[in-house]
Image 1: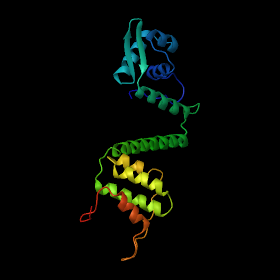
Image 2 (image 1 turned 90 degrees about the vertical axis):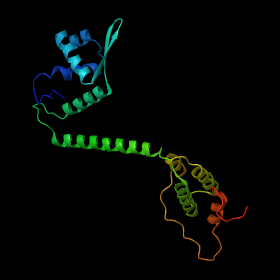
Image 3 (image 1 turned 45 degrees about the vertical axis):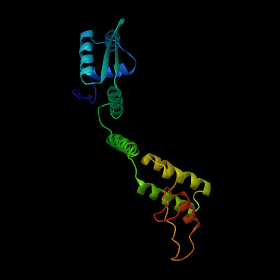
Image 4 (image 1 turned 120 degrees about the vertical axis):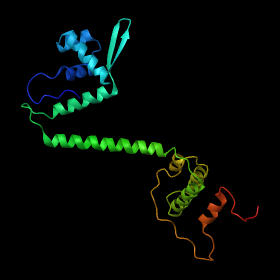
Length: 210
């Protein structure tokens, strides 16, 4: 930004005061000039600066024009107000408060990136191996008592017909990772889950009869 927040006394730059006035609903050069107590030509130049920096929009209307903040402009006003709240009467900076604000901003940025990554991953197409892995996880949840047999059947159907990872996430919704259930001893009778799994398989095993 081509202006700085003043540390201490003195009048804030017109650009900062202009953005704050726009945030308060003033939307024309005459109204802004009256509120800011600056010459209209100075306000007009500040508006042009805000538009050039994509902090505001300027829309001609039959009755005049409408000036409004963009999303970037709104974010800028919020940041300037938070910074102003961290300054003492003599312009001293509350270092602890600034550090906390930086931490919150960083965390919000990380959360936003994680959410965007999750949204992108949800649309990645899945193959049979991923569907079968999800079905196996559902069997483990059932074996450990996390879900009932009807719920297992419902979620297994979702997994077997999954198109993308978002569908698989839906099949596993609200379930924690669990330790896989122990396999039956070689030659022993099949577990109830093995029977359920075979009955829900998306295709018959190779070499099996009709």
